[in-house]
Image (cartoon, rainbow, N blue to C red; front, side, top):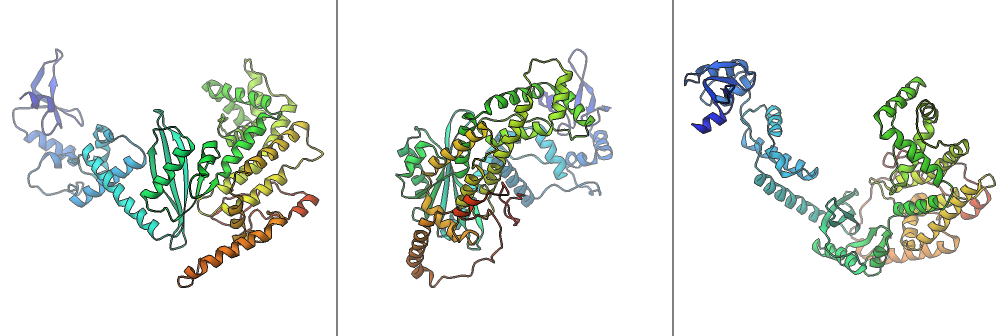
Length: 503
């Protein structure tokens, strides 16, 4: 009886009315959907009639007896539909890293009831979701294993990262070309690393992953950042090492910014952005000023120290809204030190310096095409852009010189031989203009030797590859030519849908 008083009638669709003193008024019940009161005399007929008449969707579940289904009602979900829904809930929880306890949320259950049009639907239990996630993992793992079996070469990339709970993890991703000549990649593992990231430990972790997936003989390269422990680990593992080019650019730009004359101007930019970002009232005044000037309302982003492109975006946004920002600050009381006209000019020059780096970073970060062959032409392009001119002020000269110096030192740790071969295999750069003339003959000799070694195995499995696509991407002149004339453009360009849409 006490349980009925707590749960109510008809599976909780009606609740007993409570008096002011907290006691239960049993002769009166309240509909949980419309809060209408009814007299209750131990008969549910009136209550069921109300549900069927006013809440037909719910009334079907509350009246389990045989009755004709109305047009506005749906039958309960069948077993196949329930299994499909449970699988998708498990996928959602796994992909979006949702907690398992979310299936116990009442609001979640209500949403699914409306979506399924089944008032009797109950979300699966946590234990069921756990089992389904493990089943989905095994299914996906078998698909990945089959893909690895049918490929000849695999490239691995790995990153160490730290969770919010300060636990260290290593994520390893496989990159391969399918039998249909499609470029694909997928995660192999995310393992928790208990020991310090010494070179020996890092090397063993990569080899362990390769052994688990039985691809030790197929791995050709391992890509990592340019950290010292990773560079040292690359000397231990039996695979070729390919440092991340984007990480190299990140370090080069960070060092160049610190050693040039942009530090003071950037510090002022951060304070100005913080002035608006931390005050809704200041932001509202800036938005009003943007509207009055016929500009688009857009916030000022704060840069992140570990992402140089966020610094570029902050500078670009400030330059674009210079008039609105200056006018708004002139009307406010503040203690900010505003940017001077020469400092605004510095920001303009900094944007010009960083834009080519952004284009190259986006180009090398493509996932729908192979970017390895573009690395050397991209480096050649950046060196050309960073050449000092007579019009450059001293701080720009310092930035360019430091950038080229740091880039040259970091290139020493790149797998230059493999990059040269990749460039030679790309029809766009087969003239090897981004490679010194003294090295070009050696590249072709090495490539010919590789083809000769591979020809017996290829003789009976030769298949026609995909149709060639004409590309115009980072077309580079020879080293002699770029000494005589300067680039008229400062960014690479592409004419394919797979490549980034760069101007």
